[in-house]
Amino acid sequence: PTVIYELSDGSVHEIDVPAGQSVMDGSVRNNLPGIVAECGGSCSCATCHVFLDEGDSGRFDAPSDEERDLLEFAEGAQPNSRLSCQLIVGAGCPAVRVVVPDTNG
Ligand code: FES
Image (cartoon, rainbow, N blue to C red):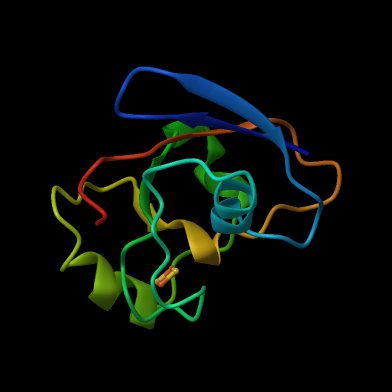
């Protein structure tokens, strides 16, 4: 499935992310800046914060309590904030769009 990453410099990157991998994986594997992912995806750092396009929220599991707690520490968090390591791309999922802030580092 395609994940569209909108970076803070205005660039847009369409990446094919294999089903079962996270939105964070797709960014890190392609060396995109913005998603730092200090903890490597174990939901304990909040440096993989992204804004998920409202229309795409139903394509992913709702955030866990752990994720919600961590998001409170993410700079500029909004109602559509998610930790991208917790957004697992499903097979056959239509393209998903996320906005990557530059405040993850
Ligand atoms: Fe650390 Fe997502 S990579 S919380």
